Length: 156
Image (cartoon, rainbow, N blue to C red; front, side):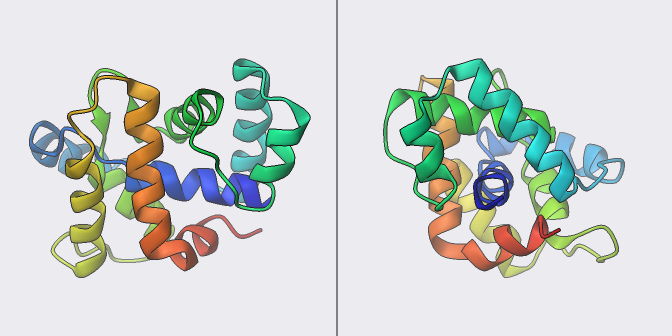
């Protein structure tokens, strides 16, 4: 459960290629459907299978521990893709990440401090050439600064 929450949060944080998505994301954010805890569980299971994560890594993910290794990088990228706010070609859609973190009934202010933190994390890692590493580093950046928001966004 904790792994799913973390993954969702990380996905929200990774907003690479901000300039391209800053304008595009504003349009898509209004149609973005906030994902639930059940969605996160489903995504986690699918992504563990996709990247062939060994049991010892899965156990770490469940404790909100995400080692800096290739399997974990691609696991988080997969989860973010499933949430619908990250893709290999364009990176993160910062607006969708912010909507997910804010919840289904919240009015999202894309000029607030949370949005700026998401943008900062995404931009800091947007030039990485490896898509999985880009997703991982951007997500960890946001998680380290806003773990409570990430956890809250996918509570059961």
